Amino acid sequence: MSATRFDSFGSEAPLGEPAWYQGLATPYYTSSHVAWRQHVRKYVDEELEPIVADWDTAAVTGDLARAEKFFRSSLKASCKKGLVASLCGPWPTKYTDVQPPDGYNVFHALITIDELFRVGCGVGWHTEGAAIGLPPVITFGIPGDRALQDRVARSVLVGEKIICLAVTEPTGGSDVASIRTSAQDMGDYFLVNGEKKWITNGIYADYFTVAVRTGGNGAKGISMLLVERSLGGVETRKMDCQGVWPSGTTFVTFTDVKVPKSNIIGELGSGFKQIMYNFNHERWALTVQVARMARICLEEAITYSRKRKTFNKKLIEHQ
Image 1 (cartoon, one colour):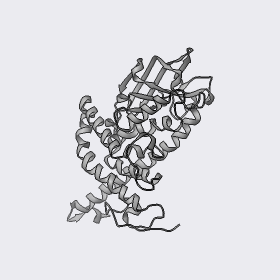
Image 2 (cartoon, helix red, strand yellow):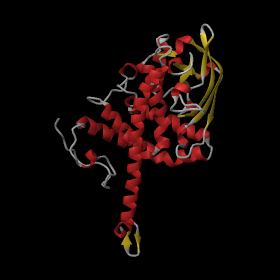
Image 3 (cartoon, helix red, strand yellow):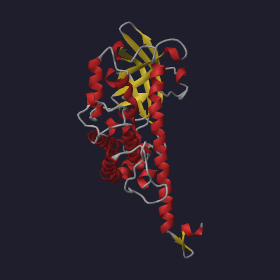
Image 4 (cartoon, one colour):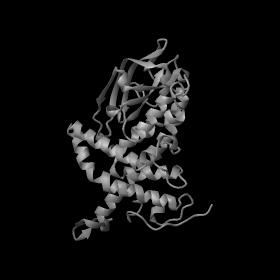
């Protein structure tokens, strides 16, 4: 595998950008990735960065209407620019008219995440509901209602509708096999009852990709179900989570929600495997996010230490 060097891009602070941004040879990136990187950075710098402070302030001070306006307009813009499509696994060509970059692969998705989270986690997560809530619908499908599958995917990918992933509960997070939210078989529908916590974008969501218990104890009793807010019985309360206020992180309560059996995602009883599959991509994305935010902290510290003077020396010269 041959390696290629590209012109330096972005910050000159040591480790302030990925190594290949700073002129080191790479076997993984091509001119297509360079063009995509420029596309995403331009969008983030021109359309997201200028509103971060106002958006965060609105969310922190409880001006939820203004915060929601920022959220919805930014999500639609990110859909139009192809960012959301790039976060959903293989490019969802069947459900979007936005064209992928040449030779699209996982490194384009990595660039999207890396560049997007230069503005921080709260604003960066305006795409998170789609990035983790839509892939199960696309990957495993809704076999009982393909029209619903198509409608959900298309509406989410243009930013008209909002979806979220609802797995974590007040009594457990990573221990997915122990979830308590139930979906009782009532004949032609499931009756869903339970609570979900720390659900990103949930306060705004029209659709909920929900982990429910349709069988007995343990992993084999879990299924995934698409719950539509319009069915009724869905209550969402915004949570005040430090550092991610604009994300719309939410406490969700399902009370006697009548969900058609046709809304099962994938296969009945295969929810645990499907969730683990989905988690692989989600956990990888989180590592990219935190790596970029760590770079931002380092970049800011180095840049400031090169400017600030104390005792007739720049801060960095005291080291």
